[in-house]
Amino acid sequence: MSCQQTQSHIRDIGLAGEGRRKIEWVKRNMPILSRLEAEFSRTKPFADVKISLSVHLEAKTAYLSKVLAAGGARMSVTGSNPLSTQDDVAAGLSADGIDVHAWHGSTPEEYDRHIGQTLAQGPNVIIDDGGDLIHALHVKLPHLVPEVWGGCEETTTGILRLKAMEREGVLLFPMMAVNDAMCKHLFDNRYGTGQSVFDAIDRTTNLIVAGKTVVVAGYGWCGKGVAMRAKGLGAKVVVTEIDPVKAIEAIMDGCTVLPMTEAAALGDIFVTVTGCERVISGEHFARMKNGAILSNAGHFNVEICIPELEAQSVSIEESRKNITGYLMADGRRIYLLGEGRLVNLACGDGHPAEIMDMSFAVQALSALYIVENHSVLKPGVFSIPGAIDARIAAMKLESLGVGIDTLTEAQQEYLGSWGAE
Image (cartoon, rainbow, N blue to C red; front, top):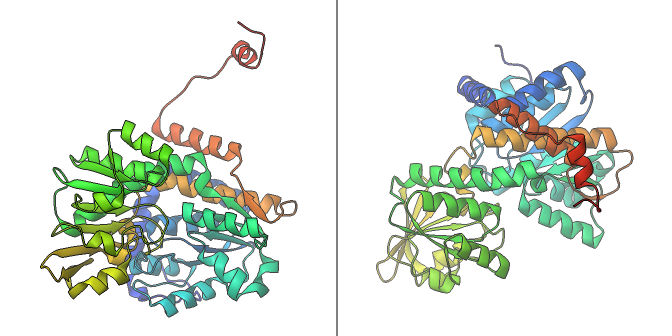
């Protein structure tokens, strides 16, 4: 296939061959998106619609972009994290005619420029992961807002920010809360995060998990998934929480619950999944074991306070690819994975394809919902319609060859009656 002319800003178009192979591999393992691609190719629901997308730019995201383009969308794509962009995938996507503005290891200035280049087309719909497109449109590029019909947000962190904007009355267009869809957070956040975090830790450290103590900061759906997989790998699991209900849930799931000041002295591996800043900070570094490994699976690189870790260290070295070693004054070494960014993407390939098949189907159908309903939607944060969840779940079961029961008319009447015994 010959390369098509685009307005891309990428590292090396010569990497397109390997990128295309990666995209084709995930396509073969994403049956829901494949069905949507076939449907969109026939119906062209996004004809003449400009979509700007900022999601971790690896093969699964690339395939989502191609599915939307098959529906007629004019796509402009960037990554949502400087270390998660895969240059070969960016090249493969660009070679297939989609505008891509991203490369691995971009500086903060380059990253911001890529966000601006992705929005420069004046999008009608945005697909965001963590809120960088939203922030740029509201703060730096407000002249583009009148063209925006609405958008979709992938993450817990991004939705928290959107709801804060909604409360303050500053959100200027409707946004679909993709992360809150049942077919997203129940599977992506739990099973996807759980598996991909330890895939990344294993490939980066080449160390065993069994027999170690894993400290999981936060017991939301992502934290539950990380704890579940740590236990499955033979680790002892300690959970830290601020929510008493979630703390009780962790206890009943068989975890030990402690404040971080106590957990810091016990952990061999730390995984933060809170979305908050300074979850692990100076007082905790001072109590950690020699050889403690720090990783983050929240969206931004603020959960582990890197400036305080640097201030306590007497030297810093690259111990191994994606592992930064900090030598403390007392001779202890503490290791940070992936510069404190999302470990499963900075040090791995992200969630498994079958999981992202459901999540990105939510994105695709939510974008379609925006296109079909933007004339009546007001600025705000909107839940994903139940019909979208139900359709995706049905397609997933069909792809697995699984059938389920349905209610008879008599059963429906029974369940809907208050007087039945």
